[in-house]
Image (cartoon, rainbow over all chains, first blue to last red; front, side):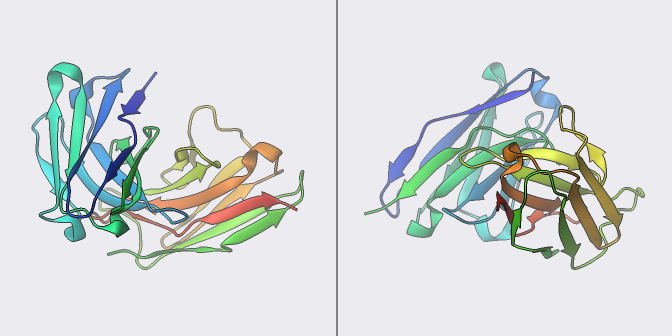
Length: 115
Length: 113
C-alpha cells in the first residue's frame, strides 16, 4: 500500500532553517509528484509547493518563493523540503502528499519556531 | 487565486441523522479537459487529512457509501447519509483545477450533539 513516512518533530529559533523528509513506499516513486501542505495550529490547510521526483523540477507558492527548497534522492525514494529564515508564524504541521490530487498523505511533521 | 468557501463552519449532528456541507469556489472548477477537480478530505482529531471524494463525486477506496459528493461549476456538496461517531472531524474541500496554488476551503467541523 502507498505510504509516506515523514521525519520527526523539530524545534528551531527564528531565522534558522529546517529540513523535513518524506519517504515514499508502495508505488513507483518517480511516477507521482510530491506536494507539501502545512497547517498552523488550529488552522486550515495551505499548499506550499511540489516536486517532480523524476526530473527534480519544483514549483513553490508565491508566498514561499526564495524560502522553500525541495530536493529528492531517488535511490531511497525520499523527498526533502527545507524552509529557511523561519519565523514564529511558520510554526505548523507540515505534510507531504502524493500527486496533484493529494490522494495519500504523510503523518505530518510538527515544526515549532520559538525563541 | 481561487477562493474556496464552506458552510457551515460548524455542524453539530445527531447520530444516525444526515449531514450536508456546502463548498463554493470563486470561479468555475471545470478544467479544459472537461473534468472538475474538486476533492473532499476528512481530518479526524490528531490525524492527517484523508481523501474521501475526488473529482466531485468519486469515492475513494474504503470510504463508506454513506459519504457522497455532488455539484458542478462553482457549487459543491458533501453529504453524509447517516452520521456515525467515527465521522467526527473537520472536512475540507480542495480545488486543483486552477493551479498553482492548490486551494482549500476553511474546513467544517462536524461533531455530535
